[in-house]
Image (cartoon, rainbow over all chains, first blue to last red; front, side, top):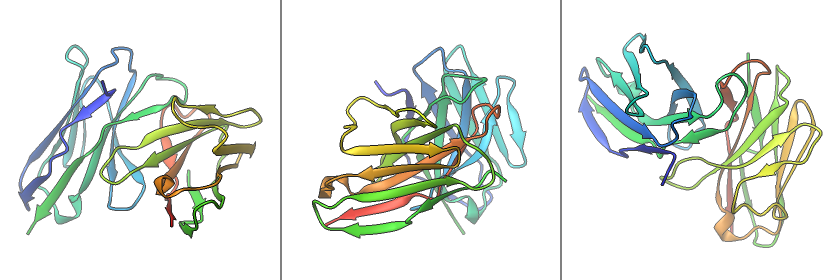
Length: 112
Length: 116
């Protein structure tokens, strides 16, 4: 069983749409969670951390449900530049540098 | 800040040759660096954890004699793919974290290896 599971998509949405991605993790001891963005043939880049209380960064909102071991990312008012693969990531150590467990990624294409 | 570089960005080699990939933290010291491999349409898979001044810790299924890792300084880790074969063709990415910076890791731009 994979540590982090994601629906690979693809999601194809028009500009301005709202789109949501979901992710589940199997290790209840996981401490920290992130969403990364990866463009084609590039390295992953940190989009945002995910906190239990939920957090928002502009058009992006991340939620964490520890009881269900579920993480989500909501993108509002999608832009063409949001087209990328979104990686859900969990780690097992919150205060020191720990290994990251990556989901397979969810592919998003925003069309004009 | 927190920039990680990798060199080379792309390499094409013949089967049986060895390839060295460098990972550098440019503006910070990294006691720990990680090496990942990503096949097309797959997730990043951790290969090994590289600690400065000590032997790397390899993930299950990763051959330590084939993928040699050296982390001789706080800003440089190298991965050498020895006797490369076509099945080693992949996207190799390193990452490093800031000491005391929690779990945030910064990724290098990756090295695309093609073995003919």
